[in-house]
Image (cartoon, rainbow, N blue to C red; front, side, top):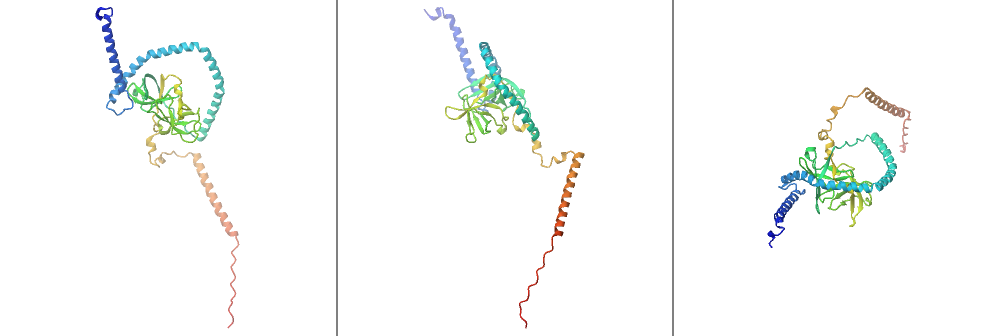
Length: 349
């Protein structure tokens, strides 16, 4: 009996259409992967890449919705069964952290008084915008995310992105409503960092693994297991003091960092509108002539004028007293004795 005469003859057309749809989906996915490579900013496909990212952002958000819902349902079920043990653990942790909280508040107050005494100007607050991860691009060397905010919200290339645990990455591409975030684990990621305990500088280098490497560490024995790693702010790309992770020895003997951002799923991030330290000052004021600010000085108050006159009078009185002491010392000193003439040694003629 031929296939077309059997009970499966009606499956021939659906199977053909399914295979055709699968081929089309695979082809579109391959094109999207080729055009979404973030390490080719100067290629002739940059315009097409921007368009692909603009379209892939909403599409990725829709396709990732079932995954997020399933994750929320599983988290809810797990939280229901482990609520009692989690509650006990949190109570123990709260009891341990209460003394640290009091000590932190006391140190914060002392630090604020020291800054006020020294006249240190605190850094201005950095504005931020919240974004949601709508697509995940992972590979053996590439680790990036698509976010649902772009240049329309003020996001620019180079802005750092953080979550509730620490630094996640930085923005490497933007369009009107979508931006691309490069994670710290990507091979193209280089972040200047410091060791919180010793203030030693280093470079955090991504290599595609979950724990990036610490390279070019300054100093001998400046890193120990468990040391907190923060952003150093060197170069002005990141604000100083953003938490990154803790140092640990890798299986190859090199220093690596266990990222704080890996403690939970990276679904939502906050993008800091921080470009560099140049945005905190006025460039025209820095490039002004040295004496340009003299004409902008305000007039002295009566108290300031009186203080200046009193200081000038004191200096004049001190100089006059010094002259009088010098004259008195010169008058009181005895005159120098005149030496007697030497007797003549010649005989009478």
